[in-house]
Image (cartoon, chains in turn cyan, red, orange):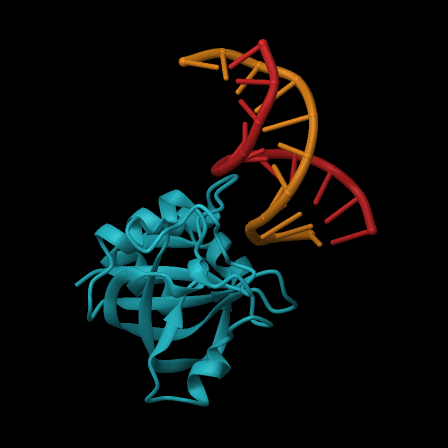
Length: 151
DNA sequence: GCCAACGTTGGC
DNA sequence: GCCAACGTTGGC
């Protein structure tokens, strides 16, 4: 089993959206970065655990945990002309983008802020805190997972 | 809203 | 395949 961190803008999809529908599989779509897509396609498996990270908002940080309930499949939004994620160059035969389904596990009692994560000497290797990193799907090692949650 | 850093596009 | 121009990300 692998660990991941997914970024999201809470106005778009927040941990509360999961908490309000705890048994519902939610489509994680709209990833439009090749490196992030490759993780989704090649390494994100059913059963993997995912930290939900709130970005571009007032309270930035890790807000909760979800679990992958369905592994890689073609992101439906790339075919939807009405979607902001529509991609005219994607075809059913040759989809470009990948989605997974995730389901609520828990909401953390308190947000683990980016400041705290940055302040941890154990987490300097985490892509999130590395300079210029813009990955919206990134791997988390088992020890990083433990260290983040212990904050 | 600013802006640094990065990714993507497209002409050559 | 280079690289300038442009677009996006995301913290501040």
